[in-house]
Length: 249
Ligand code: NAD
Picture 1 (cartoon, rainbow, N blue to C red):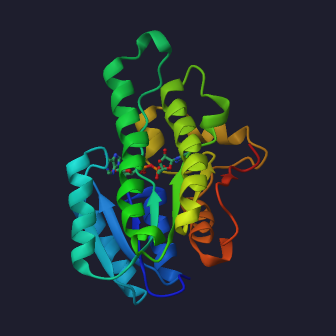
Picture 2 (picture 1 turned 180 degrees about the horizontal axis):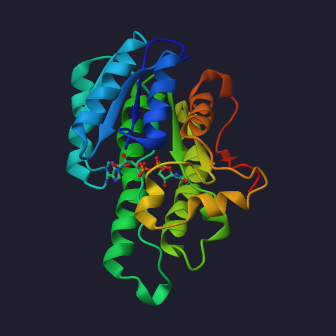
């Protein structure tokens, strides 16, 4: 629960881990700004559910990889009034499974634009508003990485894994840079979670999950729980952590 009423902005929140996180944040007392790229109907449905918890909800269309769209999104949040206390960089993409020789530079650029530049752009805008050095009240940022950052996803999508490695490094660096301004930055590294993302990569998620110590897929709600804890004051001494929520992988 945030110390006082505050917004959390969750990117890519219209489905999957982002949607589960939006609902868990609302339950925990956050007002929720729901970023989405295309599915406005899903975002509006989610906003109604957030309001069902007695919290404010705002839907904000933007491609997180686009600097102007991200700036406009934060300006719309400013116009709604209230303090931004949390940011969850959840928006992310994979690409179809491929080996190195079958990948294209265009694919690499889009993966890095969304997963890495999108995270940087949102962190920059959020930090401008949260920083105690700029008159803000501080805040908390959680970046969605992946266990793939560590094992590299050879033969599946090394490029996606590399974007998440970059997210991990950003998380650690920004955590150390921004803590003196009252902003805690942490990361969550999910294992294999039951969402639409696997349909996009073609990965056999069920088969891969069966090889895990826990022998099952994770649920989006199980990631949301970790994100909400890291956002909260209960995690006040947790800075620059990369929390694996991955069934023992
Ligand atoms: P998902 O595909 O269901 O959701 C991703 C969301 O991001 C979608 O709502 C999509 O519209 C949005 N999005 C994509 N590009 C965007 C852009 N440019 N601007 C704004 N929004 C954009 O996937 P998910 O499984 O819920 O993934 C959420 C995050 O968790 C991602 O960062 C993903 O890499 C990470 N993750 C997922 C898993 C898993 O097994 N599902 C594992 C490790 C990490």
